[in-house]
Image (cartoon, rainbow, N blue to C red; front, side, top):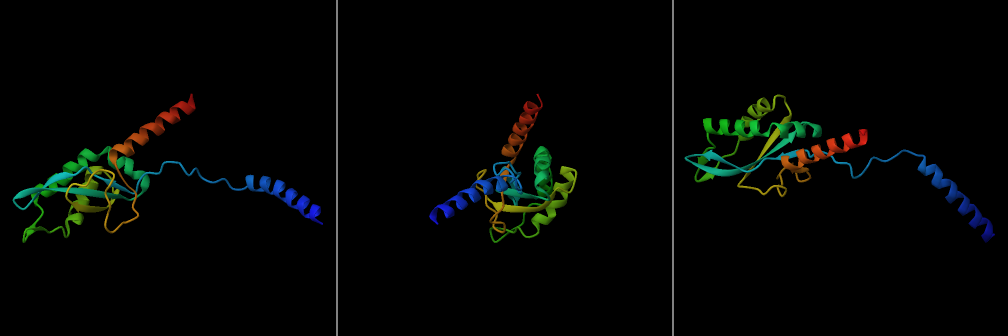
Length: 165
C-alpha cells in the first residue's frame, strides 16, 4: 500500500511540474517601474519679505509620464519661481500659509511641461534630502528624483541597443 501511494505521489509531482511550467508566465519582478511621484530639488522661494527652503513633490497622471516631466524639470523650476515671485507665500504670525498654493502652481507647471502630466503638487516645508522624502497624505507613494529616473532611462536604452545588435 505504501508503495502504491509513493508511486502515485511521485507521478503526480513529475507531471504537475510540467503543467505548472506551461501555465501563465509571471511578469519580471525586478523590472523597473517609474515612480508615481517626483521629488524636486529643494528650492529657496520667496515668502513674505524673505526666502525659505521648500521641497515640492509632483504627482504624475501616469507612471510613464514621469520621464517626460523630468526632461522638462528646468522649465518646471522656472514656472514655480515665476508664480512665487509674482505673489510670494503669505506669512501670518511668523508661520507660512500654504493653503491654496498647490492649486495656484498646478496650471503654470503643466504649461511648462507642455501637457497635463502633473495631477497634484505636494509641498513640504524645509529642504528634504533626495530619496528620503515622504508625503503626508500619500504614505505608500513611490518617490524618486529626476536624476535616478533619467539615469534608468539611459540604461534601458543602452540595453535595447545591445539587444538589437
